Length: 207
Image (cartoon, rainbow, N blue to C red):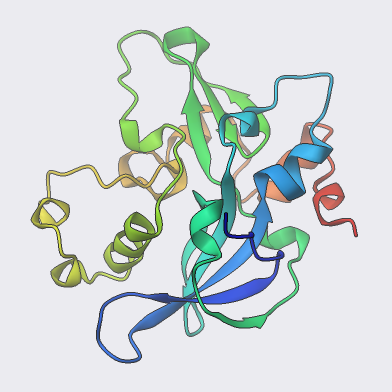
């Protein structure tokens, strides 16, 4: 089994076979190694749904392409290392997904949970449910986020009617307003959201 690179490790993520066409993937945290040991014991922990996952960000030059995505931990270590940048609290931009159905639905943003005023008439898209990406799927997501659909190998992913599997409410255009529905204060960062619910994000980065 390939070891998961330490947090802050930067790796080369090829986008296509063209020479030099690559993005930078940075490891932010591994669920099993960095997050699970610090899970609260007095509440349900949403991140327990993601064993074997690694939180990463993808950037191209100075542009942050994907602010935070869950990728298979075993896949990340197969990429070539290009450097290292320290991970700060504000870098932990965890995806937001929907758990539950109808009136039981909640917006789970990282380990924070925000009730949603939904009823059974609201259909939750699969792209807003928790899941872990393979490197191949992460590469396609990055290309689509960059507006490079023509470089995506699978025709289905180019179809405008196809629901791209972002698995992050923040990246799903028609679901972004769910943050307002969940009464997450406008402009709130994840670290602030965690503190508002009595959770200390700094514990994840403790030495």
